[in-house]
Image (cartoon, rainbow, N blue to C red; front, side, top):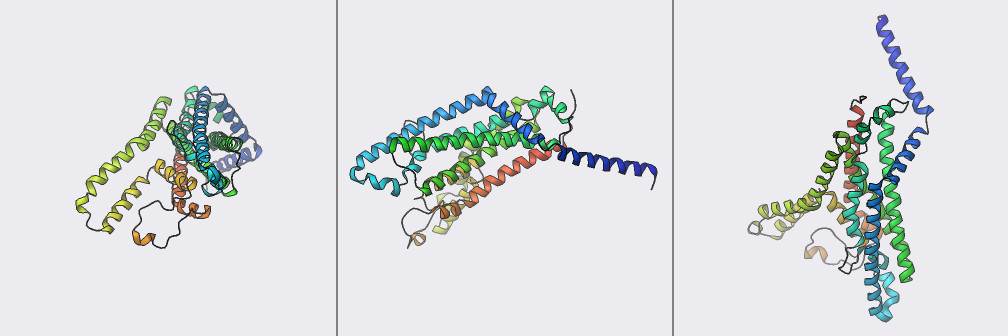
Length: 347
């Protein structure tokens, strides 16, 4: 073995040792970056405006839901005592609307992705354009700390915002209706809020991915919004158009063909994160919904009418939850690997 090879190996070992010591000697470096990013998000006018819009729209939807439920209780008269337990009164606060404003879940499904995109579309390229990325990475801080800290800070803000909104809904319901939620209703609302966090995390990671790929903040923002518009507006139109051309009524000769075509359409629709979120929220907040697909008369024979328990509802939407979580992790993994392989140059 030559002297040059020995020196190269010793240099490599010293770099590995230095990197290991850097990680262990700065255990608070990651949390420092998280606090810095979280503070920047809170002080950002963009995030403040979006947060205020989400808060105001959700308060409006809560008011219309409470008004609708109060009118239903007044009309029920003597049956008002059984409404809270039999009809899942608190779950109606998230789903009911009088027609003037959409429901709470509609606002979350529409504004939540925009909030996640606003948090992530300039996470990396803004640092690169200001020239602070190379300065930050020149410090004894591992590169993956920056990516993980930005995601953790944005996710923490999402958790605080939407759990605060969920608790606000329950507080208004208790104060105005005078009926506390049951334990199962509380668990269903908690699972719904966790689902919202995972759903928004997908759009957050998508924005971070585009911020890593594109150097321009405007390009990453437009790309993220374009994907959101595609899944929110055009994807269902495309699937309906394709299904009408492929599965025409003339080709449906029996019931099995009809069921097979509907299953195919549902499978294609479930490639959209918006549709996965819609199906999951429907099952969590509407226990009386017992299936997500078409059923034959033979399948419904002997079925007991009534709401599903929480455990059965979670089993029913487990594929949807797994799909959302997998899409979120895939977006983060692609952004992480792309950022780790990029060359960071000083301006």
